[in-house]
Image 1 (cartoon, rainbow, N blue to C red):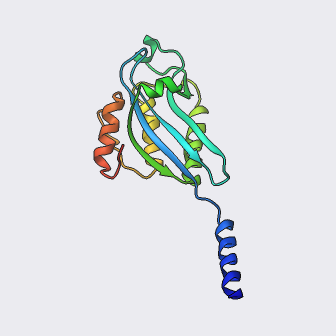
Image 2: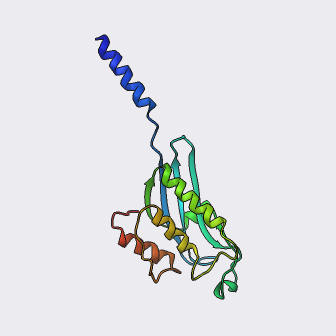
Length: 168
């Protein structure tokens, strides 16, 4: 009987010593025409193995929305959409990631934040390009020859069609 209790205590201590697995949900969104123009972004919520809470979002956009974006590159920025903006947007799919993929996504954010200016280009480096790199980091397919680089909602729907396991 003593051995059984001792073994049970050891098992409980072993289980308690195993670090908790990170559970960060990454949801990809699109925002239809509104105040500015369509937009693609992702939201991350959950907890890291360290216990640190994660509740943030990232998209890439022009610093100033002006006709200049139609003629060439302009200053760009990574932004964190506000809660009201997120709730008025279209969620497309959610995947759960661990700490390593979370860190890769944060490295992507840093990479885009640190791009030399003029970093935003409607045709070459817009919000959909940013989101497509996040999709690739997570191991999902997207069409590199898509006709939807300027259509976030259509791009997200195309990603879902290419990856049938993705669900809202």
